[in-house]
Image (cartoon, rainbow over all chains, first blue to last red; front, side):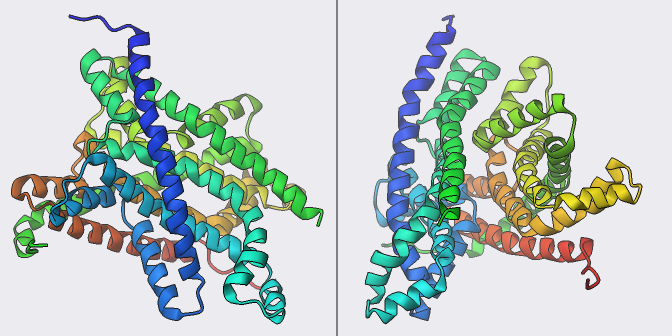
Length: 219
Length: 223
């Protein structure tokens, strides 16, 4: 029987962590782009757009991420596409995080005083100009801390992609456990690596919240 | 796309689905009650508790909030037996949910407690209430009332998150979906139907929590 040193275990886990980080980045950027589109629909003047975005958000927030992953993984196959796990994982996480980001950002846009809309309208600005020059720059301040905070949820969400067979940190944990029979050590280390990824994000979200709030009070 | 949807045969598997729903509901009932209780205790420690206990609770909360639920579940189910603590699938799933919700609800409840004006504590003391009585009657109940919507959302999130307990073979709704999928190879229908059931459960749970909230916190007399 092969003996595994602690370093062997840790090295394998760290190699797999690359995929966790990459998938998190892809989901965060993709989710942000789709989420921005959803945000525009959600606060559009047309009722049909608002309703559509609302149902999208309710659907993705009201069902388990794991089910969304399963449907992406098995559902895309129906279109005759051979779906690799990474594609299903990236797609499902992007659509899932878009729903949450759109809802977070809607709160931030609504936090901008109503009068700002009216003032910019009275300057003859169109809807897009209002958003671009008046509303979004102000909403952005409020949006940064919760957005950074949500990135923690994305990193943790990537753990579920191990279930459809994407080899990232969690899957590596299972594989290494099966090889070494040391679940306590391996899952302990996996948890610590996730902690090392997420904790700085959580902390910076808190610090940003304090900083931006202080700035806000001085206005 | 040349795929023919057939949902009819799902009816054959209704006992598995019902059993899955019941186990999911049982998990959230136990996880919800014990998790929020743990959260209240931790919030008390962080706000008013003994100094030596504060760092312990703070560490617990940071660890849980910054690691995935799946890993917490695996650690409890696969890891703890090395320490001689062997749990059944359901017990491990329940424990993981309680520990998880405990950490999240603590932070929510603490926010409610912090929003309580300092004068309330002094008012309680001046009525010769003990510290515990003040906490129980003057601080806790209005705090919970204040943050009840946020707490309800967290309970729904934990219920949806519970779908991963199928990975340690706890026989919840996702387990039933996987079972049907492996028997019939009709993955898409099985997962669409169970997703729809989850959505209904999430909406119902939100309603139930709103009703429970109205029951625990009757309208205060007008001041």
